[in-house]
Image (cartoon, rainbow, N blue to C red):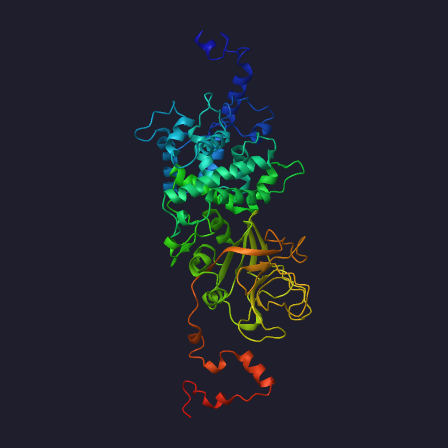
Length: 548
């Protein structure tokens, strides 16, 4: 019986159950006793026998492994966590337990090993609205951790980590499904543009609220600025307008991916909300600064047209973006309605941004990339732009058709006209070749026009302060900008000019004590053409280093 238990009958012949396996084992052991383990496929073929069937272990899914923290982590999670340093992974891992525990004084909101909506609301109370918190919660729940989802509808540890990874270090492809869920779209379906706009309003409201709550205003004073609620709606509409929706005003997942790739501001705002709202600050990530620095502004006497959402929109459009320092140069509320003072406060002050509102409530303006200089030549470069604020938030950039960007000529007789006024010109049709078919310019100009009668200026302010026009109906033929004001001829209700960036050095120091005789070479040329003698030329001071 003992032999039978080892696969042999009483007569030492193999039992039917173990005969084939036993015979093969005996044969292999006699031919290759010096080798260990199962014989290779090549050796079994050489022996002319079939390979011995070996009982295989059940294949274990490679997508699951045990982490150093003792949690079972999926391949999706491991791939995402590889983007973070070890200390950052520990920080992300600790966020789950921290969010599950309600703040001191709040009611308990956790259940088992999941994060509940009540617990998340308790942690974001006072930072984000209840609707925005619910959107975040649904986005967390929608992530696929590669394992079974909890039956009670909470957010697991793995789901939270995947959400944080996608928001903080993810790609547009990874963030698009989150945006779709937060906008109320069904998984695998399409999302309405109106739904996305509502989501953006919630997101932007939370961002503006956090900026004020955390004191991250960079010197700006919202109580002396424009309406943030209206600004949020305008900015949400502008961001939604970048979507390439279908005729039915819907968009699918590839559409959202393309939108997020082109419109980086949405991902930036979501990251900011996650960092500040959920308290997840990565050591390797510099603090997000959304607003430019504001200095030398008498807020106590000012009621600015600028708002925080408008700053969020305009600041990234500027060449130096967030590094530029903003300072108020002129405001009708402070300096009165004086064209002379307007010009005096803007000349040689570096790049400037003009913002005005007409008596019908339309708000618009323009950005000058260079200091204003009084001379009969065009100035600036292709970084200049016009923009509208209300009723829609848009930027209209130059197309490169020509180089007529900026022009200032004040207080002197110019060819062919003499009077001057302030013009930001998006499109001019005149009889003068110097400005013929002007694609875009910012222009100080005679109130009679430049020798022609077909004046189509994108933005013109008359030297008789308070009057202006914006004539581009139906649209500018060169870059498609519409009429900016409510009516072609408008009356200014409020106007302000902001200096952007560091002011330039004193004009007299830019060329090492430049002689006053060279301050206006164009005027000298005109005098010489008129046959007038320049008697002061002989009184010029010698250049430095000139010993004669």
